[in-house]
Image (tube, rainbow over the protein chains, first blue to last red):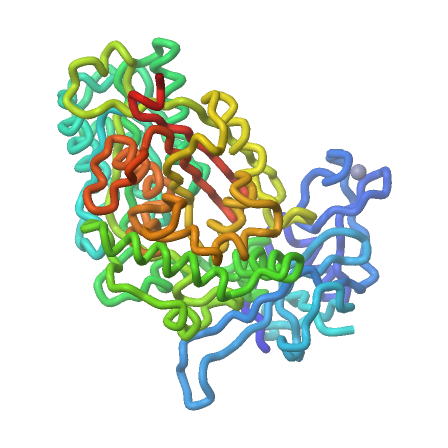
Length: 131
Length: 383
Ligand SMILES: [Zn+2]
């Protein structure tokens, strides 16, 4: 499993500071509601006063797909498992699932967030693994 | 009401820009309506993945002194939305003859359909770059995640998706404008390669070049024009607003559940009055979940419903009678709108539905994020 390159911009700088330190940062409003990292207003109460708060790293499987590439070698097409994970704090996140047999997946399975880098000079990308 | 329909050459038509297709489509629609370009006083434009269309189309067409001009974008819901806006404009007197156009030109000689839609320009930066770096590229995996959720919740199967693909290919065989007309079987569907499980190649729409335009005008202006007028009886939109965000209904219930009943209510008709149905079919799954949300079957019963023999030229449901975007051609929301007009007029040739007084049309944009419904009617349907 590989992740691709990505560079930070102003909107993602704080988030990638987090991934570099092994943290998945969520947005949190003054009332304590969590929203997904790109949110600019609370998805529960619409407050625009959002801070950052680290997720604990646990999640459950909402849905999954196996993306098939074109056959490019004798090994057959490259396959990538993508999932929606529901973080224990509530928000959903879309990324790869590392090291899992897709035939064994079921809604509600426990996941945890890990971090991978495309190359050393790119940002760390959150992925899921089976807990 | 809709008095003109213009369709350019569709499919693997190369070396023409989206703006060229758009201007061609508008000219054809005006001619079809028995009008002159100078009669057009409203223009609504929309573009696909390759962009290239804007309000500059006015200049390309050489039409002066427009009273309504705008570029709209709600992705696959845009076409039905343009018809809605045009109907509102002519009803209010803001304009009297409104052309609505969509065109796209993603296919290039020697490139695959996937390459035409799967790539993302520019270096990966920010949230959008992070999504791509995570492996989430293009719409195929996002719809696959939606379809998988429906399967996991309701027991829907890939074979049931296959019934939709087979049925629409059966209709496409009767449509000379369709890109894929050779019959397929359920076995062909089941042996087609995975794109993003649970979606196979034959669950996915085509990629097409071309343009389609329609002309909307008032009832008074429609009198004496050559084509059978198609009445715009009802419309509604629904935009749930949870793209790439926690959404308990993701893959289970779409905006169609609100927009469908609202549009039928505006038209003053019931689902049982509908003679012909044209549903946005970027994927087979989209058809299945829209049938549920419009109420053709219960929630979660879409799989058994589509496998029950109701679909295809031999079934009783006149659904996606031109082959849709799966087998006909992929011009976003204009595919179902154009086929609805053809059917309401009674000009479907071999594929014409016997009864075509009330036609229900859907548009769907994003990943089930934008829905627009139209209820169209023949003269008899409007009375
Ligand atoms: Zn809040």
